[in-house]
Image (cartoon, rainbow, N blue to C red; front, side):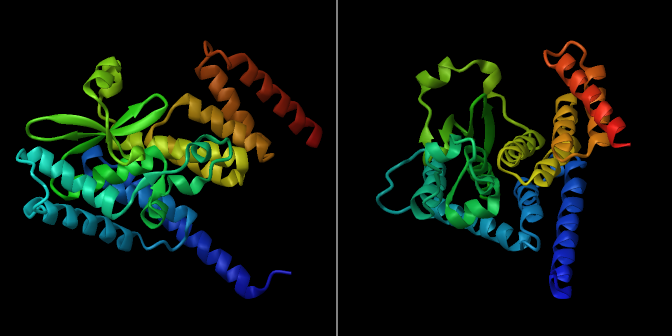
Length: 292
């Protein structure tokens, strides 16, 4: 039997999660240039961790950047680099990968179908020093930006990396592999369209898509629904409407599920799964008829 105090705690958690969602939506609906990527990522986490001290984690990110700036100003005597870009890159990598020890999760954990959602939360990356490629790359870019440097996210089809952009050269780096550089030969083999900088909203949507996939596989389904609803704020698409319908159907919310699946079938009649989705919607309609 649930006590009054337990009900109060649950109500407080729901209130805090709702407040984090509201803050995230305000950021997501604003112009791209106004989005603080680290703050938005932490607000995604704050819905999972009600009451998360977003300001404290932002301060920790700022502190990492301050250490990078200090390293650039007075690099150790062992650093013989003369190029200012190389000094800046060395400073960024020294702080993040040598001092902090940031690294990717083991491959089997990352690609296992039940990989843990915590790998997608920025607060967990800062605490555990481990994470998914996209979360590590986001932190890399945000620390660089706060340090007065320039780095952007690069969304490859099955991986996510960063590009350090200096005054004299640019280089692709892999934060998941402790900042390993992508060689010029490897870069030349990548199609040019893959090397376009990902926008902030694209990065956030991809993070949420990872969460959606994790929660659809391992539950709880309401968290998968929460992820897809935030994706629809960032980047509305018929595919996300379909996924919301499928999740709602799994949650036995047949009415809203029918609407989303039927809408997808009508808006994307040429899609390979349009007929199957329409058939699924019709089955839900029949189920609702039997329930009534």
